[in-house]
Image (cartoon, rainbow, N blue to C red; front, side, top):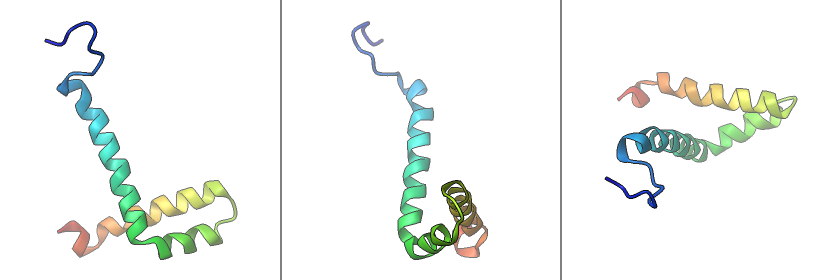
Length: 70
């Protein structure tokens, strides 16, 4: 059992944080892999919010490809 001075979360408490960070890093990697497509989406967007939504949707659509499902 951790001491009262040890402020690190236990493994069970840390798992959701680790999964959140993994999801963010995976999205960043996907964006870097597809940076040309991503820049086109951002460039044609009328405002920053639209650019964010379009980029997220573009990244999510990729998951439907046969390669990505494998």
